Image (cartoon, rainbow over all chains, first blue to last red; front, top):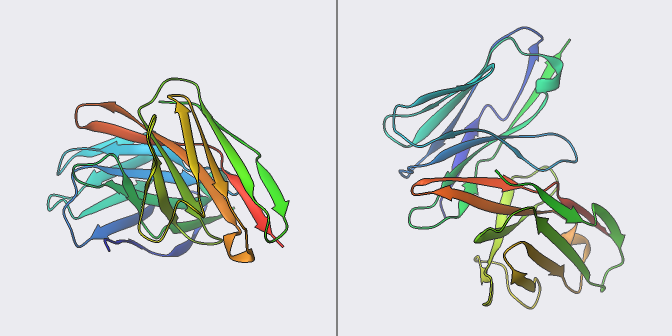
Length: 111
Length: 116
């Protein structure tokens, strides 16, 4: 089936550093979403991308929809301890309202 | 956006029993979904909960094991039947809202199920 691969799988960073992660697919998708999941919680929507090449920001978060429509990047600037969690990308399956999720990037921030 | 609540938030159940999870949304939505998240894993779609008709299940999931009800546009239930330890997971309700091509998906807080 279709698969979304995220990298890195996990990362440790120092507080204040910038973080970059990506999500890739072998198929083209027209809607990409980024989520953050805290322990014991449901995923929370961070950014939605609808147009190839689009760059969208939400506070310290910036996400880009790749021009090939097969990838997306999420950047976090000046990380803080509460950025700890698992970040998932998701894409909408064409012709449906269903989404599939990436493998996740686990972020740990060292104070 | 949508505000979604789930009950129970967590439960510990014995194998062979069944558990029904409730999902309530603060507004009427057409699209409701149920996901499973196994320990340390990503989210896997179980089924689409259709109002007024049978749920649509993804490959690997069947109605006998995961019966779903959708009596109206704000509520759905998922039952995990004849449970085994392999069913220990977080079960998440979600809704898709938007207009035209601009649809987003929102999640409830999840139900953490442990089967002993």
